[in-house]
Image (cartoon, rainbow, N blue to C red; front, side, top):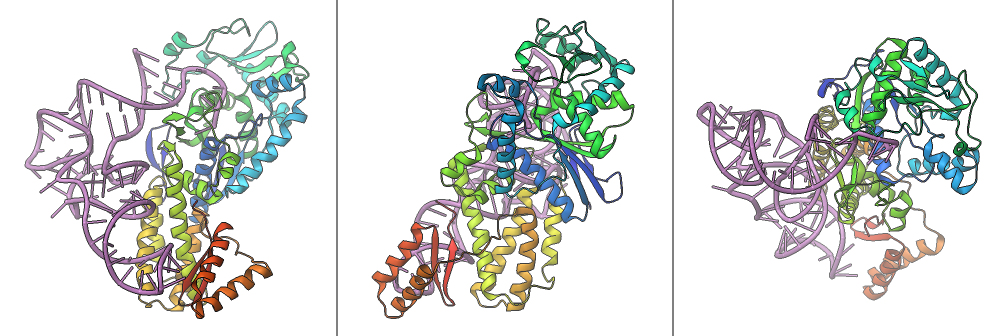
Length: 464
RNA sequence: GGCGUCGUACCCAAGUGGUUUAAGGGAGCGGUCUGCAAAACCGCGAUUCAUCGGUUCGAAUCCGAUCGACGCCUCCA
């Protein structure tokens, strides 16, 4: 019993036990707000959402911090190209990010700290690393982490420092590193940085990318916290460097469990900005895919499995969401009070498989098997309104995880509700042409009218 | 070259030594129901788990080889 998770650090599935009773402290790497995030980025955020929802479902309290990178090479570059400043460039992308997260039904983190608001914390941390001889200052005033000073370097990604020496890009012309594999903590100001720069004990400049996560995670979650997660591509060098910085500075353990999410692929190739093979959320919405469809698609493949994005795959996801919602509609038509726990065993079965490293495929199998069983009873009219109410209770529980089943009801304007009444009369008088005409009219508005023994059922159409 | 993940039906995908002559979803076909639809239900659908060899009383599951796909080693979710 209890949740088990695959720890990338030990490469084993481990029982999860929070450090502090039932409080879970979770850090995840957030977006760099230089542009709109693509749907591959959101795969990772939806994975974190699933993790958080399962933790909460199981009764844990979750304190989640997600950083926002609002200063880095790409941002500075774009500011140069567009002849603007960080404070003018980034807010629009941050807003878009929050909006997209909301559209995809992702629960917000407790904190979204911005890198530029934590420069002082980063400087303090760098000072500590210099003090503890893990970092050195170059002639120009940049500060680098000396990876040879940290014996466990490479332990997370299983990359040996020897092999790194053979492949690391030599960039001594950019900064004066002692060793090409050392990474920047503080970068001295250069003309192409424009007006980006902060004063520091060394020289005016800006933080390296990795230090923000060490500084902000420890500030909000303490030196040692439960879970740190992100995409697999962050494992090296980003997370490896975070460990080096954090452990180097405190001498303590840093993170209990590391979780890494696999990539979203397009044509069997990683979706990425640099390859240009990406879709933003907006792109896919404009193609007619519903937010629920996209959420379901990203949510329902195991997080350590690559997903290949195809429109066929999205269509299949839409059909599945409709199946779940159609079941909800049938229950709603029948349900009495929403109480009771006749179906608690189904929830137990669900949680049991979800506890195995978030085995969502097995979890869905539990849900769909139950739905088929319930539909059978509904077809036979052998489900009482009490039991329908109880089933609805469970369905709501499941939707605390999936968040695609329940929606705000459809509100029809006067003209449309009159049309539906007209259609009912037409059907009674067997004027089928008129009835079909009205059904067509609604279909164009993505509303399906279904004729049942209990009258017309109005549904929002998701599938294209 | 180093490190790692993966290959299960038309598509997606769970299962990682016996309770599986392999869950679940989608698509398809046939049927029930329906004015017609839609939804739902019933039935059909892998004697087989990339290939070959080995271990075992027993393998999709363990080991080895081969083939193929992908990721990281450089910014990246």
